[in-house]
Image (cartoon, rainbow, N blue to C red):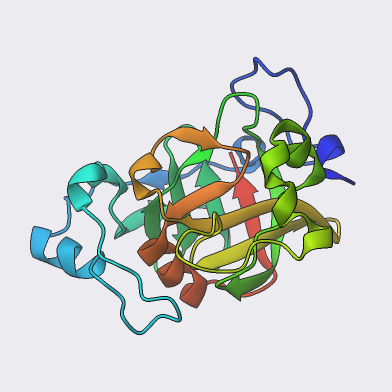
Length: 222
């Protein structure tokens, strides 16, 4: 399955279906209890600089990210096993299911209208400071990206790389969908639909998620 086959539906649709998948709304529901915002001091530390990274991450301006999208542990009733990653395209939340009715919740940015999708896959592998290789379909729309094509070796990792500090690679039926959960230097886009189909996170958040998720984890997008 290539990326064009992976995306189905009209460009005007608000949510597109992932071909051949069963959506989470058909197999179970999430019930999250309201939780208070984390302490501001903890938030500033959580999103502070990370000088030990291969490319040292600067602190983010948390005032540019709505407080509901700050990382936090929440109480969550879910039918899914521990380790499952769930992305909700309505709320712009990513939940990682934990033990004892808990989950880590992160804010995400999603594909702009016409590129959103829902369904199920597997996080087949993950990579720190990945290269970025735009798909052929994206290069067709934006020819200036040709310099980063696969034949040219892709875009090297770094602070300006669109995949950010970490990337989780989404597969379906053993085939790379070309979709990623990844970091982004444009943290002010969290909670918005701006990217071409991928799930983007604050770099500090994707580093945290990367350390918690195992390769082969189940991914559900609702």
